[in-house]
Length: 453
Image (spheres, rainbow, N blue to C red):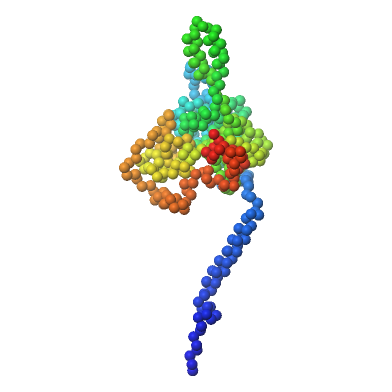
């Protein structure tokens, strides 16, 4: 018997032995995946472009739950709003303050309102803003408490036709507040909406963004000049009284219109852009526009997203002044330098959406729900604004491991954790018209992403 000849290296039986079934399956899967990818990429140009939608799920709540309250809402007892603070004799003729700073909050959150009153509202009381808190109907359990609080401080606006719950607070409350404002008989040149966990550097915001957009009209200039001409014998006295009365009779008027000041935010789920809801400011005519549009369209979605939706529905456009990440950000205590203060570490990323306090630019510091963090940030301010940071230690404490790991990934371009908020906006939503950057067809940012000048 002769031994069978060995199989040739290229024979079919040899190949079958060398190639297992597992390898065959993997090869077939790779071929199918490649073909699917080719078909998908080829179909992309023919797909309809994505557009904005009205989200019905807001903060894990279905907006269809915005229904009539289970019980009849009792009207809030008489408790008229008092002046923002008692006027002194010298202030009795001063003009109304042009800026309303309204904190949207729950009626039950008495402790947080006291914290805000005793910190930035008190520290910056020399800035010409009117502080207010906006609550819905407190209900029977909290009615007397809120009434007593308002009689004491006189700074609470009660929307007693709205039930106090999460769905209302996250959908229609802000627009209902704007409607209340228009009916109140009060007028402000700028209206700022704030969350309860946001620290506002009021002097910086006033000097940097509001004052340059206000004109100072002295109504008595002509009268004072006539008095000076007619009373030559008392020229010096008239000059003194003229300068004094001028400072009290001057009134501010907005020199811009249809303007929003905030941080432009992109919602991927709704494919919509709007001012990030923790803090933004609008001119009075913008408030009027939104109330008119809401009466027409009755949009029920996220309270801040609704602004963008209304602008889209009506094909409207407004100027947008975009705050940078240095000015408005979420506070991240793990980014602090580790010396017990809120100042940032040396290797911070000041334009990211979250970081600690860096430099003198901070205006709106968000995510301060914890009272300890709130007071830590408060300790970095005087009535003039941000205190200069003390010198860092020779050896700065190392941040937590997850921060160092994120730093490493970012340095290699493998993480977008430090991406500025504006950079998250899809490029297809941005284009130029006559030298101005237009976002989402509803916001005019002026020459650049820094916002309308």
